[in-house]
Image 1 (tube, each protein chain N blue to C red):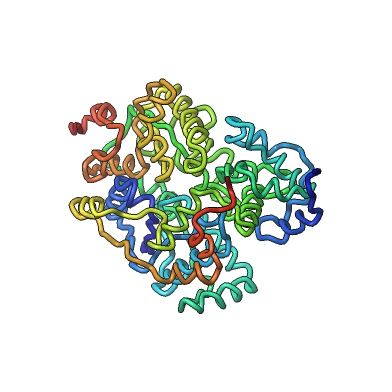
Image 2: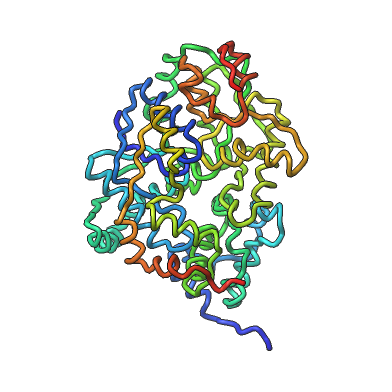
Length: 167
Length: 296
């Protein structure tokens, strides 16, 4: 069966914060040649991701592993002649993927930790003692307001469903 | 000079040496860094999952600082970029500020848009300045050659940082190194990312990227690499042995946070700067400076 295309996918992206300029891309490839990840592994190909998105290949883009490989270094954003703002646009795509139930496991674990502790890294008992010994304050306290933000934004739906649709 | 100190999570948990050195240097220079108990995550790690939540967490942080009447000083570039972006957006866009405040109301917070955010290194460069710093040098670091590593979010995206740095040819860290008497080294691909952001997604890509930087820095025959980000230090210091084993290399490259280097120039003893907590021991560097401190 041929792949289903969604001509409005590009509009969905351009209406999501960060994705506003995706339609400006003229496929010059400056992002690819600037990308440190692309230099190591060709499976991360920002120009191709943008092209696929513009062609409406929604399912393939949103369910892919490669959208999670952007290292957010912003080198491509600084150099893009069309101001596509690729890392921000990649965030918009990832936000849409999450809404469709696709999320990389490492981000689920991180979100769970932030929801339960208020921080993306937390101090164990040993580390707390060590900090006291060397005269550093132990300030990490629980933060119910963060849980409230998870509820307000629907982020709690991700942390409370352990697995996404990924294989 | 007084700031709300937003230390973030990676620094106190993974690189307490950075925290120790920053606090000590700030104290020595009379920069007051105020710890605030109510601070929580800046929102940066959630940007790719849910930008609205990330933004709310960032603005919550700004609103707490505003309540204390203090601008924010950060030491993690991730926090710096998230909080600066939020501060910039809400300063310029009143409509968005109203929308965000409607949601913040639900957690009992409000933000009027008056808080500025600066990385500690930028505070040193702009607020204290090289002239004043030069007068405080007690021990010249002449004879040392140090490779500055800027990482990513200290300079980029440049649109949120009011052009204080050129992201292609940054200079602030170079200048902050060279005024101490040390030589600031140039090396291949100086602005390249450490790869830490994708460590949880693809370890091999992440370590390959970090090893490239270590190759380039090693080739420039320096005494140490100097950085300003806890995640970069996790890649280059904490994981240096892992990378050496994985790629069959030998680096033995000390990785110092910039405040540790500045601290040495200010005459602070190495232990107070947390240099004993660095994974790759900077003994040879300290011997060169005749600091007469050796760590196991």
